[in-house]
Image (cartoon, rainbow over all chains, first blue to last red; front, side, top):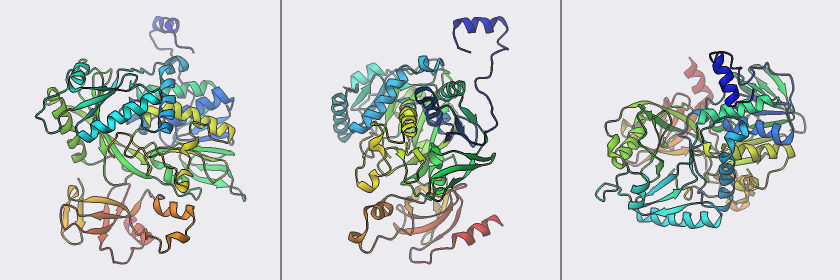
Length: 416
Length: 100
């Protein structure tokens, strides 16, 4: 069913009780052309673009839990593309351009809201780095501008620009095209779109082994719902990529860390934009439900526990209270963790692997949500044509062997 | 917050420590003789296991010394900690002991 004003009125007439399910719950077939492991935003987007742009519809997306229940449903939904290096700017801005038309493309309201992402500078070093970012971004056609503290205050009135706080605001870099989207809707929209094109989304189906023939090429995956044959398998499993790739005998340049986030009680609209402060680890925006959505830094040790230490969130809350004193008496509703797979250069890995038929899309670390449409788009192209798309060619696994890192560790403007 | 047993100072709170990555990754004795792939494996590839993990910690806000720990990355439970020059523990035996 196409969603429109007409369908809304028709369903309203029957009391909204006859809306059809948005996707099927199929029993997995014995074989597919392509199996995608992981039904998060990136995996579902990959399946969608495989079916939509490449005509590959005999596709299964296998998910060990429920779709969108991993990092897709756990992140703080910030979207921006103001990365330093040319390769990064290309892929993140590719994603941002897809975000701008995504609701229309999917006929599904992903609530993309380009309300502006303001990144605060608190030290002289921050100022130098951010101004360098602004110039580099503009050379790449990515919007980014430098704001003085007064301009930051005008753009985000709740911001405390007093000079006597521990880390005073010395300015900020603003990407006006950046913003937020509804994370669940992104997974649901891609799931519905892929399902309508014939893709099977199989939930509660954990991959337990990857089968290969004598030449080493992928032939099938073992799952908790039986063996599923496929000559092409794309692993899009975020924090669990290392364990999945180990099933095919591959060691990955990845470590998995918990990254925590929390939301407050819902209040009326008080916060007009997204503010990030990498130096003191505070990431904040307000959802359309009214909750403040707050992100912290990663915990220091590797873990798969999907929770982290309270002192990490405390640290973030202290920073939020200093920057936005009006939130000091706000109550927090819940906090949680997601497991993020971090590469040595803090850039993702998207492409082929040494195992024929096995493709990987991982290493998005603490910032994968923003790339969801672009990541799925180029990964689908890579799988369909068995060669990397020009945009993801630099993000190969081989870059670590060849020493061609895309070093966003210091440049992503995110303190890791 | 985790309680971590420093082999030198005893049990202390997590915020006194810094995680220092996977343990028992010796620097190759003759780096020049390695292939690029072997060097990249040493520099970048990590086991990143879901389960028992042998890792280095440093008691930065205490004695300042490095030590090794075996931790379950599913529960964050510390199975043991030991000094750097102690024998590497047998993970298989530790895992079966944990199951009991």
